[in-house]
Length: 142
Image 1 (cartoon, rainbow, N blue to C red):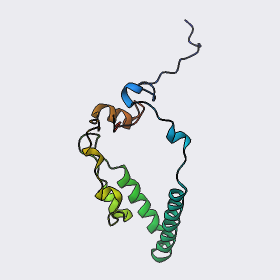
Image 2: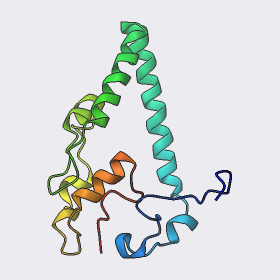
Image 3: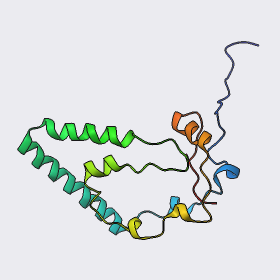
Image 4: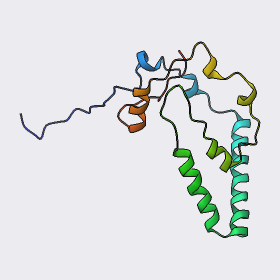
């Protein structure tokens, strides 16, 4: 055979639409956009963060918001391997100020207590994290 022939693209770990591993793909999320109130909330949140960054830059100098961004990036990458104990991201919550917020997840039922929850596959989760396999790291529900 000649070395200049066409190469077939090979994906390690299979395709992302693996129905046996990840369940059936729903198209509702592809068709329906976000709620207008949610987009308004996100833009308002972004505007508040920009104003806070400007105030911090004027008060403490331009390097302070950059240091905060660097800390946020470091703390957002720190995670436990996929498994029975999930990452709490406590350091990131303390830096961003979301630790003081009382959200829906704090008083509603934890989805990890559900009977329909699939156990996390440690090997597949690490393959996804390292870029060897594709798909969600942990398909959560059956």
